[in-house]
Amino acid sequence: MEVSIEHSAKLLHEANHIVLTAHIHPDGDALGSLLALYAYLVTQGKTVTMLLDDDVPRSFKFLSAWEKIEKPENVLPDVDLLVVLDASDLERIGRVKEVVKAPILNIDHHISNLKFAEYWYIDSQVAATGELIFRLLKAATATITSSMATALFVAIATDCGFFRYANTSAETLKIASELVTLGAKPHIISEYLDTKPRAVIEVLPKVLETLEIIDCGQDRQIASLTLCQKILTDFKDDTEGFINYPRNIEGVEIAIMFKEIDNCSVRVSFRSKTVDVSQLALAFGGGGHARAAGCTVTKPLAKAKQLVIAAAKQQLANSF
Ligand code: 5GP
Ligand code: MN
Ligand code: MN
Image 1 (cartoon, helix red, strand yellow):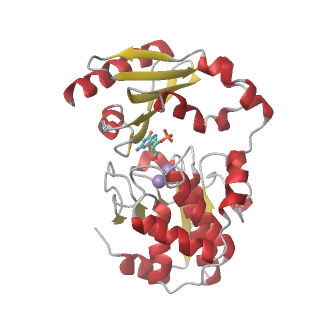
Image 2 (tube, helix red, strand yellow):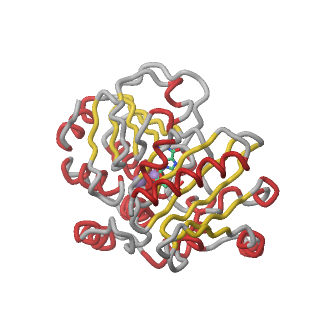
């Protein structure tokens, strides 16, 4: 059932033991939203458990309370509400769905959301789930501390490419401005997010060697990067920005990054300038936004590439 932000706040208010989770391969929006909401609920005297079926990437380990995030292992009894953040389908929370049996409140902004929860608050107009958590905190007249403001700033800024992508609205900037007033420090946050181990920079020539550009006529191209297991050994976490290289090439409409997880599964990221890549990702069981989406293809790398590139060509041809 669709709920308002006030109803979402009421559901949280009425629950005692709340489990918070977000999508696997967590990004800034997933983690920032999770940690900001956690901080608020703790001040409300709730018993709150954060579960994530994945590791917290190195670059987000400056956010308060990240170390309180647990992995789903044993079944958690007596949970009143499971809050699923920034995830558009149940598969995206991994094993959390097996260890928590409770009604779900899904707060999300993906256009591809499957409305799988008992309660959902979805607004695909906003740049990030962080904007929705900000709205929720306002509706609950919560006090937003500087560490909550930092978490929400990370959530919002990372999902809109630091206010450069098409999803950046006047409201996004207004909220960001308020978060800075409340203590978020953009330059310090950027420093944490941009600083990488030396090995990540040193591997770039190898990564760029895998660049492939496919001409699709009318000066429109698809560009891809391929990270095989061998390249990935030391920095699985730190591939976040790589897709911007193909994305930023003149004439490229769709950028794709293939990340070989093992011999029969490949993570695929899509970025686009005009084409709706969420449709493309959905066709492979994934999802996302019009201009940033992803999926996992359970095929060997070469086969996955072949299938995905053929579908991307088709999507581009359809958009002429
Ligand atoms: P990224 O390429 O940064 O991993 O993901 C881009 C966007 O697509 C994000 O909003 C992310 O949540 C969404 N996304 C990525 N992979 C998947 C997936 O496997 N399933 C779904 N539903 N969404 C995905
Ligand atoms: Mn996300
Ligand atoms: Mn998001």
